[in-house]
Image 1 (tube, rainbow, N blue to C red):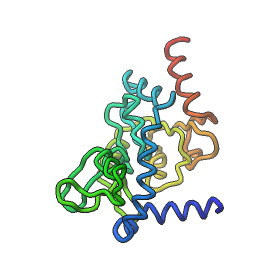
Image 2 (image 1 turned 120 degrees about the horizontal axis):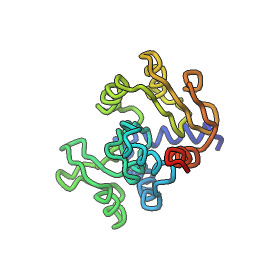
Image 3 (image 1 turned 60 degrees about the horizontal axis):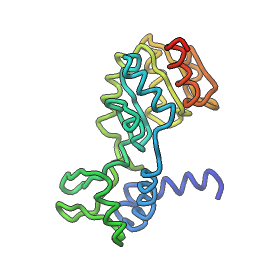
Length: 212
């Protein structure tokens, strides 16, 4: 399957209508994704961002990632714009809990994990295709209103509405810096652009601040 075919398949499986009408297929896909959380760990880039945050140089992390690694690295309140795989939710009764509520059921042979409160089908606490973005997006725009420098790391910035963030900051008089391997949608707005991996560039920035 080519890249476009894989992308289309992902969008199909990660769609709210698949969760509603084909929960077995949906959870066969998402159960495997959530299981990978146990093998993932924060990298040097995540840790450097958390360190810059502790020093007061990064005010807030806005992320499209759903892996929870910014939290694992020590960032205080990362704004997870697309939600997190670390939790599951019930759209019927409002229950929210750790992903182990679902993975423990799947590990015991359940095909579809059910809410422990009302028995409805659980859903990963991520924004699926076909769903509205959560209130976190409104909070993100409030953060951008106060932003004097937007540091865009490790993203091609092709997915909307996040792709509009650099233009929003520049239009208000702020600056944009980009750290990424390959072109991004923010390149034309960037005052500084580094063609580098975040796991290399950001630790180097911390070392530079330390005079090393």
